[in-house]
Each structure stands twice: as structure tokens, then as C-alpha cells.
Image (cartoon, rainbow, N blue to C red; front, side, top):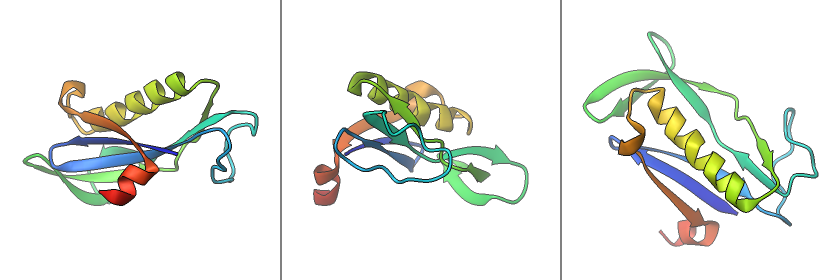
Amino acid sequence: MLLVRGTAGGTGLTGTLYEPGEDPPSFKGAPDEGSPYVWICDAFYEVESGGQAQTVGDRELRVAFESPMPRGFETREAAIEAAKEHVRTQFARLGVEAADVDVTVLQQAEEAEA
């Protein structure tokens, strides 16, 4: 299991990439069981009211979350690239430039040690 984490403006977003032999959560909308790699991560966007208060850099804003959209991939490389792009896209939805998002890929064991 890999964790793909993006950080920018003092906040972060982490999603999970399940690899072959690991069991991703099963729920409505999950990809076909035949996908060897499954990416799951929250998606969010800025709203005028409601949502959850979040500070990104020097801005305080309101964020609404969408249901996670699991995606299946045939190769590890394609899954990791899509995961990185997903994380950058979420920050872009909050007005953060892609170049300002630091994306790291960690094995789950590394996360437990940190």
C-alpha cells in the first residue's frame, strides 16, 4: 500500500494506492475487482458557505468534500501518476498552483514510522 501525499500552504491531502494482493475497501462505485492497482482519495472544492473551514497559506476558506472516487489502473506507474495529478488538482481547486504542491509517495510502513 502506498500513500500519496500533497502538501501546500500548511495543509495536506493524503490518498491511498492499493497494490496487487491488497484488498481495497469495497463500496458502491469501486472499480472492477480485476484492477491490480486501486487509487482512493477525497476530492474537494471551495464553497461560499457551509463546508468545513480550512486555512491554506494566508487564506481561510470553506471546503466541501465529494465522495471518494476509486479508480483502477493496470500499472503501478499509471496509478502513481494519476494519484499525483489528483492531489495537485484538489489544491488547484483551492487556488494553489501545481508547482507549489509538494507530492510524496510513501510505503505504508514509512507513514507508521513518521
